[in-house]
Image (cartoon, rainbow, N blue to C red; front, top):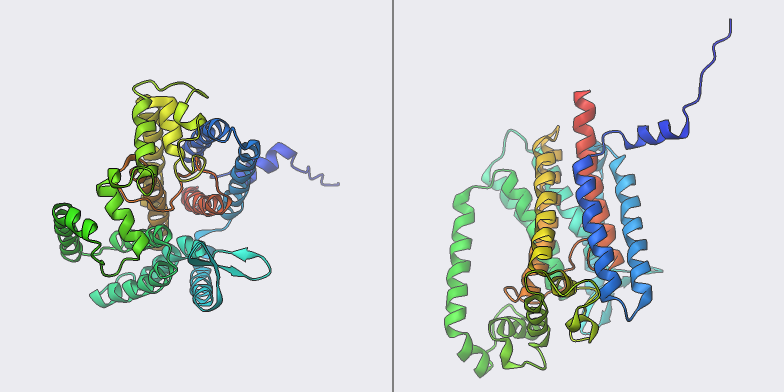
Length: 384
């Protein structure tokens, strides 16, 4: 008697690879990507290639998400130390002989031009999650100091380039992992209090400091100007304050319902600088109004809450910390971008996830989504 083994058909193979994918998370990303394509079609009207390139970048990010989702969290854990070490080594190489563009040394030519700081957006939460997993059950204050040192080294190298936006993203990712690992509020509250006091003093004495051209410590000249511009954009309305002023005008002119798709005057008359990249939220807000802004914010909120739910159900401490840290990267991206366009945060180079044009950022976002999908799949496989 012969045994006949039937080969699975194509749809059965697809179901096998898609098994364990988190449906709500995928739906949230799909809706945000659709919003991004609509906004890119309108805001990139003067450059027809931007729409198609953005679609290609989204597909690349989706492919990376699919590939990373197939890697179990334990295998991801084995990548933590090599990826972190490679990232720091490349940052040192950038500091020694990197390429300089527009006054910033951020790139490295290794046959192709790369920006090593992007690696740390993922490598940083990976490394800290690995460290706390190794110390599980015996965490001491010294362990948090070591984690802080692991965080300070790449953040310092990135800030020195200078690249304040990327340094902020890497630092926030690391701090969130440390917080989820159990960092005491006694260590968190004092820096927050000092920050609030410093902000209040800045608001009070800012006119004199900026007007007199007083040099602030630890800040580059352009970073100091961004803070001064944030607090008083009308100081130089046609120069350094132009971005913030036009962003606020565009968002405000959208009103409650918005001017309508392809009807944004600030966008289509070319008043909004960087309208397809850092300031695309202004173009979106002008055409879709307060209603559209609220829907977009709710979309990002759902994405973050779903990511935190996945983190909460992670099968190991490493998976929980990694998923939590990666999820908060999405939060930081969205919060900082919307904040700077709305005039409540200084202007830094942080794109709006899935909405802004940019291939490098989409690769990072796809990798992060793949990590969340991997943790979700691991939990479901354990349950089954």
